[in-house]
Image (cartoon, rainbow, N blue to C red):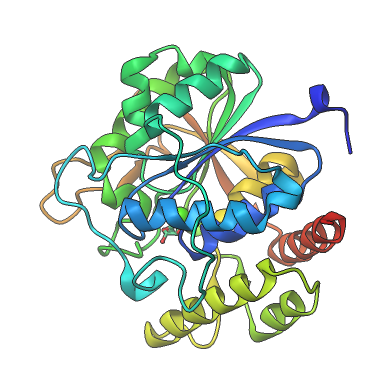
Length: 328
Ligand code: BDR
Ligand code: CA
């Protein structure tokens, strides 16, 4: 294991969530990562469920993460509008068919926004931030600490659909559609970041298709108790995708965005000016990319393009296999 001081501090803001759970497990399995905190954001499920899921998962992964990874409960509602949840996609509590242990510890006393700020201040210029759910808590954190874009090493976002059909309304992607105001604020604030955020939008993340073969390969990697949790959760995801007309498979979005931060070879990324539509009667929450430069704005993100989907799935399974083997 790399020296403590050399590990990469990371904050994961998620709405766990089936693919969020895989992303969290991936981070736990990397021995070069120090998970400085988990912020639970309402989205795929209500924030109480998301927080319980993150506590349950960190308990199962405590052999790798250590016992004290802070898990904060974020805001109950988006900045704008009513909360939407996705019980059809992720199950009533967010983890599909999986049953997690009752959390033995409580959530951190801090708000999700405060945990963002504390983690960034504790690791100035080093913290890698991930938003793989709605942007509510990062937007609130910016109110406490407007220097966040300069304090983070880099921000990586799963969200949006650029010139691609949505998965929520016809042109909107879930993480942005749940809280468009928050996503708009975050993108605007991080336009000041020294290094542009990476945006993994649907046109990139949908390149990843888990098949029955992937599910079986995951089932076979280890006898660790996290494995049946992940495969039971994924079975629900497959059932949802099948009911939605995609066949027996699942698009697994979040882990690609997380893995690409450490393994840039998994997806190319190009600069683009991107903004969020806030007022469209049919398109509120759409991410608009200005490929022609009509806005005369500097690019504010690096948007993912070509994905090595097979390479990613192989990499994910290998990191989990190696990591779970290390868990005493
Ligand atoms: C995103 O929405 C959620 O349902 C997934 O966890 C992912 O973060 C995909 O649109
Ligand atoms: Ca998510």
